[in-house]
Length: 219
Figure 1 (cartoon, rainbow, N blue to C red):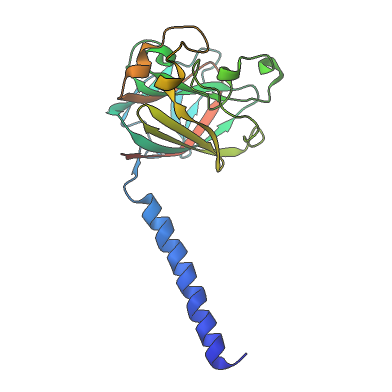
Figure 2 (cartoon, rainbow, N blue to C red):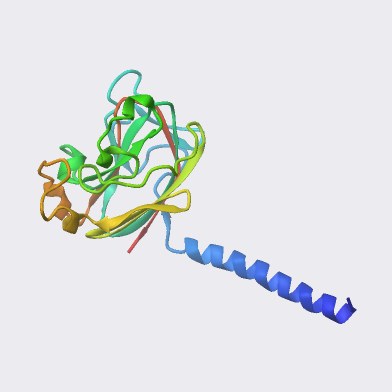
């Protein structure tokens, strides 16, 4: 290879590298961190079971239900990124468009956060597995990393449409109003489906779960 060709390919290589970096930066543009890594400033709810620890939000209910931890601010349409790590048999939830009182699965919406592989969950309804809009839209299974490893999740909400991406794969995409127009899968009332804004929260169910790198971009 001549020096001219080598120089030419070097320029192309550097352009690609810097282009990828620029693209990576641009995709982060507009995102705001919801967790400062140090304390639970900006959050309300159960700050006894939920703790800031080593750059993570950790729910350690010590045998209790764990309760809920919500953002102080309300959000409408958004892109939410976060990472989570499950413990064996863990069950939690992501509340969206939720008020601070009541069961977020019904008065707002709840996306399941669940160890799908646990034997005790083998007979759940399809709308109860990880990533599902609880009671309304089931998510695809088989895309969680082994328990104890970190998972990456993105939730895109553009009311009434929702998309859930886990570890790079879309496991749910749909319209929760359209999906429930002839009744919900769990045959229960979900008045929160019509809500277009509310709090985002982690919904405890008595298990240890870890969260970090929680970022949001409002749409």
